[in-house]
Length: 388
Ligand code: SF4
Image (cartoon, rainbow, N blue to C red; front, side, top):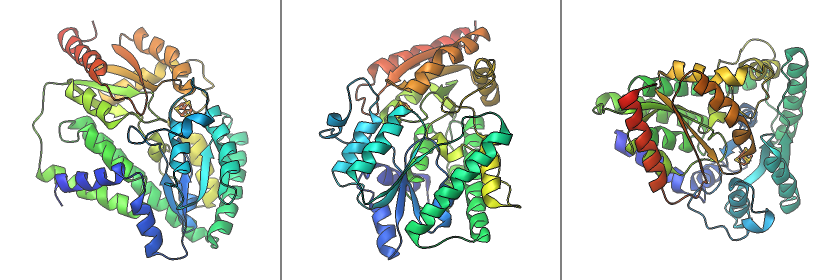
């Protein structure tokens, strides 16, 4: 399959707010169920091991008109929960048998309560991911939460996975994360061959299809980019920070690239690569998954950082690892975790003379001219003056 067909297939999945691929999967496997999860991190391995289909719910972007969603929230919060409510109230999520709400922020916590009231027949769980830096406390706590969740999911599916089945799911998701690391590494080294628009569409497709199919899709893409290389351009290299939950519209991602910036690292859909190392496959699977989260979670605003210097050095470390020239802080409007961290992150970046710009977006932003001007000027200034 060529690059164009792979990306077209991914785009179809991205555009389809009726989740037809999920519905097809369910009708092809009578008796099976699908479980949705909100950003940022949910242990998809457990959903998969129970024979359920994990489905990432990332809002309606700029493709859904909010009619009922606005009635549930005040005006000064982010857009994501409104469009998730809209998707639910318009029946587009009626194929889900459960929804997981990770403890990303108060907005998602509140949404989990609303969901329970709106959909009493669905399995709804608020997932309290650990925010304690002490492994001796955090690991047993998280393992207990995982065990509770596994038991609930097993009841929902009617299948309690054996240890070997759990290990197989952990191993599969290790492979998915390894493929994503390879994809990100390829974009770091050859950003002209892996445009961020394409990388992003692939990852969005991965939120609605089984992990086995996602892995196959990424492998086909690797072959396609080797067969159809692109020409390098004289772009600046930037990392995008702050878009870990509500997602920017695809038009914004394209705008950044077209303005002359190669995105060489980002935190879009960071939940799919939240664990930076493979989960250990020997030993009790739930202990291994809990340990992996506590020891190897990616540095991001939704996990408490105990070291006061950690936030200050985080951006420098990311810029160095990506070989980037600058940083674009791009967060959803009213996103508490991203915007509370931003001053610390930016201070840390500027202390190391790393050029930065910052803006806010909404998943339904439709005008990109101001972003184009900002990113274009930023790229030019980096090329002209570097870090000076
Ligand atoms: S965008 Fe930010 S504030 Fe909104 S739900 Fe996500 S983390 Fe919470």
